[in-house]
Length: 84
Image 1 (tube, rainbow, N blue to C red):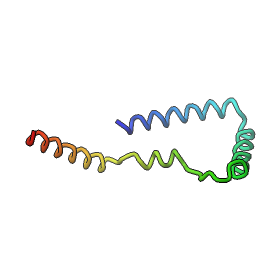
Image 2 (image 1 turned 180 degrees about the vertical axis):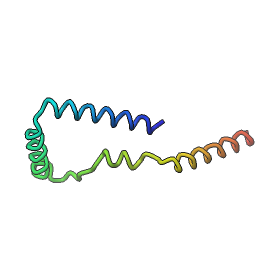
Image 3 (image 1 turned 120 degrees about the vertical axis):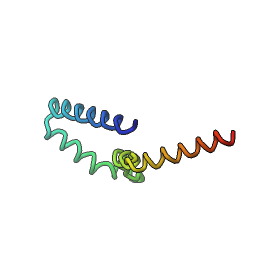
Image 4 (image 1 turned 60 degrees about the vertical axis):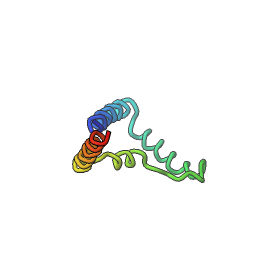
């Protein structure tokens, strides 16, 4: 259920990037990125930089983890049904 959501999120991101690159010249985007990169430590010196997209992708389970979690969930529900 999580993987299709991330796939659609990636497609939406690519669509937005395409529209932005069509409307705004690459030179202006590069200047804005450079200004942001060099002014960030001056404007907010105590903020620790994080990469939210990378952190999100690290939290997505692979197929082996999903199978393991599903089997553990199945074992727990069987135990609850036997005891209850």
